[in-house]
Length: 258
Image 1: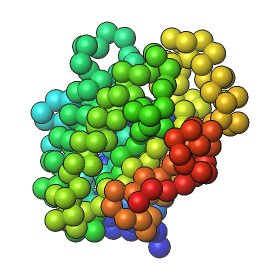
Image 2 (image 1 turned 90 degrees about the horizontal axis):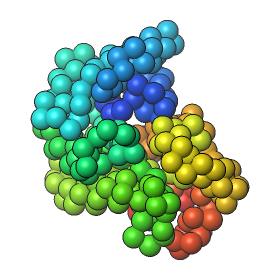
Image 3 (image 1 turned 180 degrees about the horizontal axis):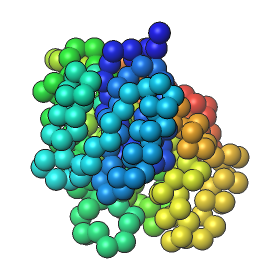
Image 4 (image 1 turned 135 degrees about the vertical axis):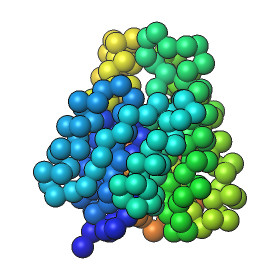
């Protein structure tokens, strides 16, 4: 028996990286998982195949969260394939890509997060859980400076977190909880790759400062764990970055904030 037997989950931005790992972990706990991609269908289908080969349930759904129809497509997939929606993992993020519009980071990291959750609230029952994935560099941006190349994205992700927290009273009315998972730079992610390309040596420097960086699989496991963890709504789970947390007044590399 898994912790999520009979439940349905959506993981945004889950065709690769952290999102793909989270989808696998949730499926292993028994959830039917909507694997979301924006453009790379083969990647998403590979994630689904892997889950199914391990005995799990999943479906790949293409949806751009910055479009009006994106959230609706994901919710329809969850309800039609798995009977509802009990876990929403808001993992999709961006803003460092080339060729995107000037305000794309805010559109994706703030507006799309709010729109996705707002749409999901129409179908999520009491007892459901929402998990928002962010970074220390974003979560602490108001008190701890980050690399200049990442600052616009960090500020947009913090804006997204703040906007989601403003929805806590509405979530409480419905009996739905929100958990934020904040991690240090994660080894092997798209963001880390783009940041290192813009600022060569940045990730190695961060690795030296932090002592170690979590892998995609390790961080994905922590995010997935928060889908069922017994923590209060509004809780923040910190993963990695002891030096970062110390500078921000925290005390341990994996700690909590109620």
